[in-house]
Length: 328
Image (cartoon, rainbow, N blue to C red; front, side, top):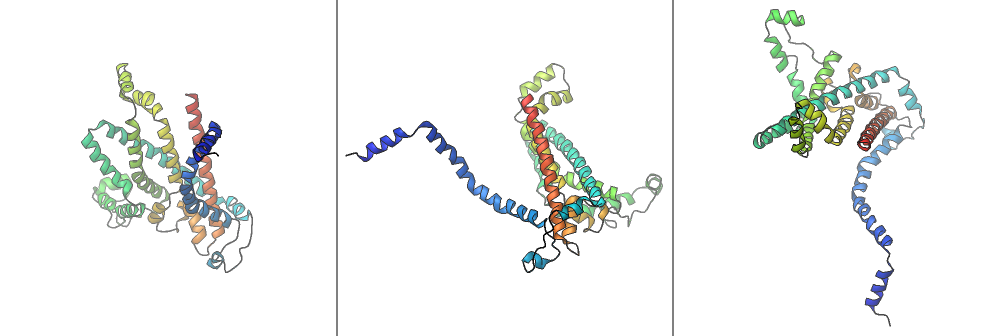
């Protein structure tokens, strides 16, 4: 009669290495199931709802609650948005704003990261802690502070300009009294202030990420380049940057996504959705969906278009980075 020990030995003998490997390979996927479930509930399900709403004509809260039938319009919302000349203006504003902010954020963050890498341990810790305060500040809180700084009556910038000599202020700017000057009324000036706010809030993350990457660069390579007569810029471009290219690739992708989706800062600085000349895609979607009369279907279609643009931009950039990695 076969004993339990003998049966177990026979089963283990019949288990081939390939079968054992397949069983082990399933373990990572099983461990990922809880995270995938959370992502599906918190991210994919709302995204699916937005995509579905974009194919309907929704103009009342009763429709969203299910009290009324959703009229199917197919691609009519997308055709209306893409055929609107104002959409091209909004898209231009979004792209130009995102490009300017990504470039400025990456440059400033990289310079601060290089500075932190050159400082001593205690000073670098102190400076990094101060810099990260901007990153830790909620976007709403930080934007309210910046709006007060540019307040037209009691703001710091208004006070500083009023302190300029009248002759100098008139010669340079054509006015001597800055009280009541609308800093957010001119679209170009508004985007300049918005860029200042977004870059101020974003560059600390870039700086700390670059600093972490610099710690992994062998100092021997940089020292060898200096011995060969390379200056600071040549050392960075020929030695440091190639080794940190994956880090910069990830940071550029993240910055692009964040800057394309800027909403809170613009909404607070503009005081709502009244100034359509400064619209970008995120606030354009909000305005179409919630401004009276509400058009939830149109707002959803704009949100889907923004998501597709981000997917395309991110995919193209990641492919370029991977191709460069393969070539090197």
